[in-house]
Image (cartoon, rainbow, N blue to C red; front, side, top):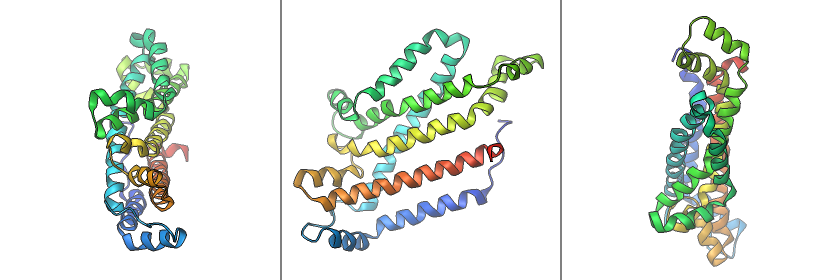
Length: 249
């Protein structure tokens, strides 16, 4: 990858420390229990069937799996329909990924349930469909924004279509592509709170349990933890964008 610059280890220290501190915070059950007990004195303060750390790790695992599938399918699909060989299928692909966000994730879960059964697979499928649009849309927009004279210059120096794509188009489109990936992953993480509806686990478990019994402490436990992870994930991807596209600084 000639256009990828070596990553500086020091640039990754801050995100690594932030994630370590966050996992330590989730493991500190007593702090959460005392805080929620002070906020909701007349309710059971903490969901104790699983530790908050275990729930957070489950949530991240579901998010990572769905996000990986989004990248595995979305990026090649968008690049293909942006090429002459796949241009005829571009309207179809754009409509299909848009439909993925038209239906609420809960509806997708209900439709997937007869095929995948209870467990995380249905949630991962729903999140995968929900996360495709930002990746596909931003990849198409990034590639379309590459100046035509730059493409002509690349062809003029003898680049093949594949070389032009890899050495010119993707590097120039990378900031927009990374922005789409960042949006998609944060969206998937936030939406993964619906996973427990079909036995998927994660931080949605205390939220669903709290809603079922009217316990605001349970709901707050899951919601605060998800919000913290979403902020941390967004910041981490912002740092990665800065590292991978230093010319934008």
